[in-house]
Every structure is written in C-alpha cells, then in structure tokens.
Length: 350
Image (cartoon, rainbow, N blue to C red):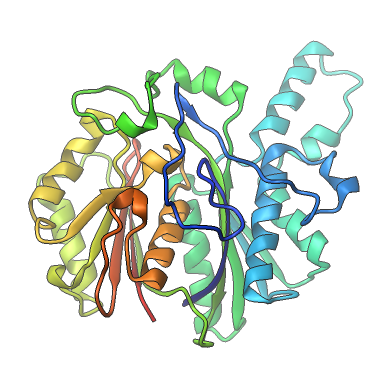
C-alpha cells in the first residue's frame, strides 16, 4: 500500500504540512493534549459547534489528508479507535445519573458511538462507499490498515482513507489515574528518564490516503503489518517474532535505517525495549515516538506519520538530530502497550 497523503492533529504542531517536527512542543503534567487548528477552513461552521473535540479533530485531519492527496472522495473510509467519543459518552452517563434515567435527550448517546467519526467523514464527503470502524484496543489502527490491505487484494477498492483517533477527557483521566498508569512529569522532554513509574496520556487523530498502486507522489510504502497479543512474553520471544516478520519480507536487521520503539517512560514497560535497542537493533538508529504524542491506544498511527515523513525526506527531523539517511530508507515501527498488544509495521521509501 502506498501513502499518498496525510492529515494529522496531535500534541505537536503537525497540522497543515508545515516543517516536520523541527522542534518538540513541550507539555507538562500527566497529559499531552492536541494542538488544535482553526477548523472553519475545513469544516462547515454550522456543524462545528455541534461536534465534540474528537469528531472535530478526527474529521479535520481526514479532510486535510484528502486535500493533500487531491481526492474528492474515496473507495473506502476505515477508522480505528479504542475509546471512541469518550466526551459524549461521559456526558450521557452523567445525565443518566443526574436525571435518574428520565427525560434524557438522545444527542449525546447518538454522538458517543465509536463509528461517529467515520460516519461524519462520510457525511461531509457525501460518500456512500465502504465505511468501517475497528474497535480493537491497541490493535484498532493496525486492523484498519489490514482491512484496507484486504480490500486492495480482493479488488474491491483502489484507494482508501484510513486513520485513527482517540481523545483525553476528564472522565477517562479520573478513572485511569486510579490505576497508577500516569505520572505528573516536569516535561515530556524528560519522559524517558530511567527509573520512573508511569507515563503521560496522549491523544490525536492521524489519517492516511492509501493507494493500491503507486502514483508518483507517494510519501512511502507500507510493506507489512503484524499484530501479536502477548501479555508476558518469555525472554527472546519478541526477538524471534521480529526476525520471522522481517525474514518473511526478505528484510534483514541490517537493512533497517530506523526503528521507532514504543517507549512510554514507565521503567517496567520500557525494560524489554531497551534490551532490544542494545541487542538486536544495536547497529540501527533507534528512537521513541511517545515523547511527541503521549501514550494512547492508537499512537502507532502517529508513529506511521513520522515514518512516512522520514522516508519522504530521507532524514530524521531536527528534533531527532536531523540525521540524513542515504538511498532507500526502511523504518520498522514496534509498538507495545501496557496490556501486551504488540504491533509491527514495516515502512519503506518509494
């Protein structure tokens, strides 16, 4: 699959295809919230006031992606989200309690469903083609990509708009905070300092215009995707799985120019990733990506946006050292969350 357009709203100044991560935006505390643009140029002003945050930034990211790709419509709209529209879900449940299950307006409930983002994109485009949403925890985005891949293989589509979106809300933070998953950080610049417990919450919406065939203006090519559910893998398991994944696509470890690893700043979570970086990936450039976007289930979509831009530019962004990469570029994304969802995405330049 070929990436011929992107659209992203994230905790970084990533919207609008400006300079690619020249500087990292700083966030303090336990949250990394999106830097939201002016929506009026992309969305109908009459609709904006009725949209929750995630619907606004999800739809805007999708529209920006289509605009860059030069598409008026698409053969398929495929979205991944783990949490869906949490803000509206929280509003509906609060009113349910407040009004003792009586005299409830259905608006918040209707807009709380997970497929609302994909539906809003379809309505905005007046697109009646295939529209699907995946809600598979930290595999949601990867399964959206695999769905597009299968549509291409079966000849049911030549292009697809694929993306993911998840949001931070006061409700979700209050609940998840009780599990000790997050910590208050002085800065996301120091998120990866060793010996710390907890991470920073993140959010964002990332969309990609994918084509079955190359068209001449691609960012990069997605060569392979794999997901594994391993809560406590035995020593050496992931090394073996990564080797098998790469070998199946005739790629060796030495062919990788960059490995983006899903460090999140929690010392117990990151230990295995540090072991890989100093072991099988010792001859490759390795970097985290959650210092930019925070920890959230579909953060691998942000990593894919980074990988696509690195392949297109043949260099790392200034905030990652500005290192030039010569010739054909290959990037491996290895993400893992706290529940044992492991995903691998192999990306290469065109």
